[in-house]
Image (tube, rainbow, N blue to C red; front, top):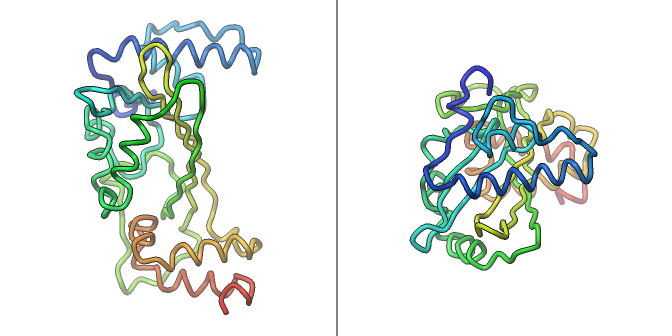
Length: 238
């Protein structure tokens, strides 16, 4: 954020009102729950959403309804998972997720309907996860390094990236505020968590899920499934 701010924050003209509304909401939350009284400070005269994102650990995005479709109009993203904000800004909701195989067919219309029906006054939370071969949070497309098919799996290189995502509609602008909090843990820690290893084994048994969740290290799917099966309780692999 300090070295290459243009890679982290971008906004389209017309998003300023929704940005300011999001900033005030986040300031109010910090004052009420964390008793931070200086949250109103913005000494660098940053764009409102940029200032808001620097107050919290989450990545912060705004989607606004334009021509009956929700588009990404402003965002501060410090933890992209092999994508670039400039490539997503201004795109419609489903186009943002185009690299995900078959997403439009599987859940595309449900995503669209959810955004259109999202009520005021409620916060929705969902989770997402991936397997990365790096413990770095900021990953651009050019950082993707897939192992060779004949390269032995290096368990110490694998990390489970979990995302806690929230969505809420801003009452004045009607924009959707989307936040992402990242948790990154070494996959090897599952050696002491057999039940979680069994859950991951079950999830990656699905070929489509494996393609999406471990696309960086898909060549290691088979040895990873074997390792998880060794760790999981016997009843989970029966």
